Image (cartoon, rainbow, N blue to C red):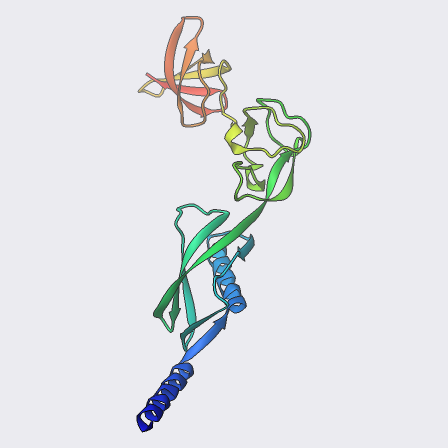
Length: 236
C-alpha cells in the first residue's frame, strides 16, 4: 500500500511538472496562427489581396513545450496552388516539437482584364475595349492579363466575347514589324555609308530581332535587325 501511494505521488508530481513546462493550444488558436503565418509569407512574395483559410485541423487542441511558437510551412509544389495539403513543422523557442498535416485554401485576388464588347482576333487591347474586375487568379486554367499589362501593346490571337476574361495564352505583344508590312531596309557598310530601300517583311519581329526582308525590285532576300517600327538594318 505504501509503495502504491509513493508511485501515485511521483506520478502526480511528474504530471504537475510537465503541465508547468507545457502549453496547450486550442484548434481555433492554431488555425489563426497558421493563417497569419501563411499570409505573412505570401505578402513577402508580393501578393497583396489575399484570402487564406485552413480547411481542417484534426485535433481539438495540441500540447507543446512552453515558449514562443513558430512554424515552418512546407509546400509540395513549386508553384502556388489554390488548395494544398501542407506539412507544418512546429517549434517552441526554436526547438522542434512535431509536424502536423494541414489542408489550406488560398485565394489571390487581382483586377483581371475582361472584354467590354466583342474583340475580334488580331485586335489591339486598350481601355476602349477592355475593363477590369476583381477575381481569384488561383485554381483556374486561365492566365488572365491584369492592369499592369494594359500599357503593353498586346494583340489578340482569338475572338473574345463580352465579359470574357482576356487569357494571356491567346494574346501576344504587338510586334514592331508585322508580316508582309512595307519596311525601310537600311544597308550599312563598314565605312558608315547607308543606303535605304523599300522592302517587305517576310516574318514579324520586335526591336532586336533578326528577320528576313525581301526587296521586290531586285527579288532578293536579306537578313536584318529590327531597329524601329518598320525599320530593318542590314550590315554589308
